[in-house]
Amino acid sequence: MKTITFIGNGNMALSIAKGLQNNYKIEVVGRDMDKLKQFENKLHVEISKHLLDGFDITNKEILLCVKPANVQEVSQKLKGKAKVIYSVLAGTTVEKLRSNFNTNAVVRTMPNLSASVCASMTTLTGDEEFKESALEILNSIGSTLWLNSEKEIDIATALAGSGPAYLALIAEALTDGAVKEGLKRDDAMKIMRGLFDGFGKLIQTTHPALLKDGVMSPGGTTAAGYNALEQGNVRASCINAIEMAYKKATQL
Image 1 (cartoon, rainbow, N blue to C red):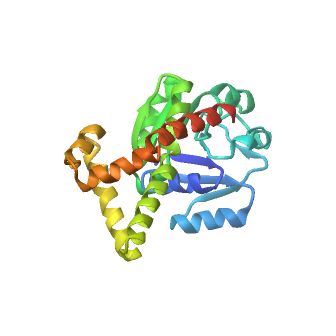
Image 2 (cartoon, helix red, strand yellow; image 1 turned 90 degrees about the horizontal axis):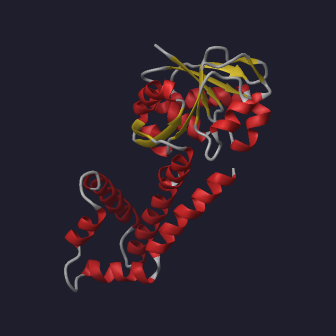
């Protein structure tokens, strides 16, 4: 069984590790052994745990999950030359990774939080030599799409990487609206979850505009609610959210 070495043990690393643990051996490198043990406990499987200082990455397949601001500091604590680095760092270019880490190859990836339930939408780009290997690994946690440029993956970061937060806001707001009108919170939550589950399946094969038209009858309840969303500039706000997130990704 192939070993994947995680450098970093935060939330994204944990989400990905949960998706990979059945198909790969997990090795995790971090600054604090107590936190590494907590990481292991949350996975419910035994993993190899190592402290960052002086860790040898020679010929290892690295999944880099540190904060973008810590790239230089982390790289200076490692020794050896990696086989490949799969980076999940938003906005961190291949060139920056190459200039800081000693590695034969670099692949940028952008999973999202759904990796923990093997339903991530992960985009990738980088060294073509490791395209198939990267796709194989990340397919273990959901769907993948190889993109042709770093600009495209920065845009995809704004959509798929940040998207769970946007959808969570919509889910919470819709639930609050139902509670405001008199529905019990638990019932509203259950209905919202069922809504998202069904919609997730429908959107795989049907264009959003067609789904909307299929629900919205003339002068009906959906039309009234949809008009309220348009009055609140929800469409423009979503478009602006992608723009702002993309710009931020290019500044990291």
